[in-house]
Amino acid sequence: MNQDRIRSCNQNSFSHDGKYILYWMQAYRRFDSNHAFAYATSLAKKYSKELIVYEGLRSDYPWNSKRIHKFILEGMYDNQTRADELGINYWPFVETKTNPAKGILKAISKDAAAIVTDDFPCFIIPEQTTKLASKVNCPLYAVDSNSLLPFSRFEKEASAARILRIWIHKEFLKGIPDFTKQKWEKKDLEGLHQNTKPPKNFGLPKDLDTFLNTFAFKEKVLPAKGVKGGRNDALKILKTFLSKKLNNYETGRSQPNSQELTATSGLSPYLHFGHIGIEEIFTSVLEASNKGKWNPERMSYGKPGDREHFYSESSSANHFLDELITWRDIGFLFFWKDKPSRIHLGNLPDWVKNNFNKHKLDTREYLYTLEQFESAKTHDELWNAAQTELVKTGRMHNYMRMLWGKKVIEWSKSYEEAFLILEHLNNKYAYDGRNPNSYTGILWCFGLFDRPWFPERNVFGNVRFMSSDSTKKKFKMNSYLQYIGELSGNSDSLFP
Ligand SMILES: Cc1cc2nc3c(=O)[nH]c(=O)nc-3n(C[C@H](O)[C@H](O)[C@H](O)COP(=O)(O)OP(=O)(O)OC[C@H]3O[C@@H](n4cnc5c(N)ncnc54)[C@H](O)[C@@H]3O)c2cc1C
Image (cartoon, rainbow, N blue to C red; front, side):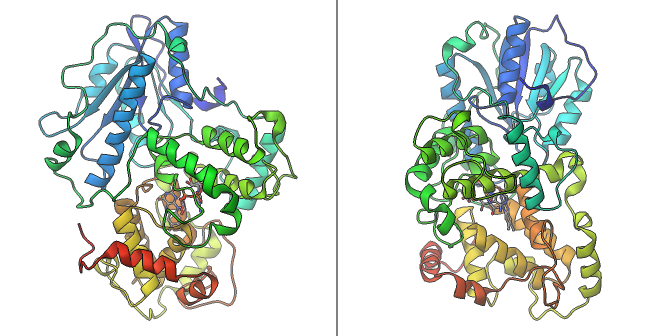
């Protein structure tokens, strides 16, 4: 494996007395198409050690809810099935009041010769990794499976997508990135499973619904109808996208619609929890759009920076891959060099900060509280529809998400309050929340990665402005509004 994906998190030497290599699956919750799992496997083979995969679920993470817990647990059941197929020693652990997680990881790390984990740059993961690295006696390696190119290749963050696009394309022209094994077979992993048993309190709940009903969650957010987490559903959604939507992506992606009718993939929750990997999406899209088995020779290369022509013969596929690669990566890269300190408005470019200093005292035509926003009680029909979609389905169409964010800025007392409201609502309700792209998506509404726009406006100054009226002129909104109306039913309350 390419060494530029691997980061040593402490100075400890390999513990030859250790019984096993421990893969601590934190962010990329799958076996296939996963560099960290592949690296753990290679260490186990090299040192003739057993391989243990530990996947934990704490009960106290920020914004925890039945919605998020169920999605993650469904992924864990799929992983258990796949581990059994592959003969892998998989140790799932689910925290409850009577089965606390405190000390568990440290305890199982005692017998590890080395630990491998995922190098995800956001939410609670960087802190958890640093903490464990300081407590164990063996090396802990964090492996970057986040995207197609390892982020250590980029010297700094990019100030705009058009700049990162050129950097990425130039890297591709130097050579195809080091893709990892996309589908393991049992014979590849032979000998890595011996007889070490997990502690007694490990394992998955026998009945998911009963378990979820007895659990006290911080947030009262119910699972969305028809949404199931896990690798099996991620692969089904990818298949539907390739056969029914990919060809319309370029022209149809911005039209707000239900998940069934929109041309967008709906893959972001599965990417966020690592139930599917970007490399497997990338190769499947190239195979579907170039009509044949993928191989590097069949890549089409336009000029660096040419969004329409770079990866595939199909412009629609290229548009999709640009979102999946450039737009997703710009958020991860924003967090990469400076993980903990990216979550506030101080990270906006100077032109935006100067602009906000000038406009911070502007009169707001409408002012709403968090409670009014959360319960979709603004004067604006489209905004309320977008918020209802988020609460009821755990998603929001990308175009509506931009409008939604812009309006919270316009209708809040201050920029800082708007940021906190957006962070809270996005991370509480969205399946794909708590991700680098949650923050860069929100900060984009404040002008991040964008340029000044004219004329200068109230509250926004030169930051791009969006309105519901122009959205109604640009798109056919009736079917979106009808879909949302059907979601809301007759209930007055949006809260579960
Ligand atoms: C206010 C706001 C909040 C956002 N919060 C999140 C969030 O919490 N999590 C999240 O993953 N994305 C977020 N986004 C980005 C974008 O809205 C979602 O990634 C996209 O809507 C996911 O839907 P999809 O999987 O159907 O996307 P598709 O259009 O099918 O695209 C495929 C993949 O490309 C990536 N992608 C697509 N559009 C964007 C984009 N604009 N920025 C970054 N990556 C993109 C996603 O990983 C997505 O799954 C936010 C955007 C805004 C404006």
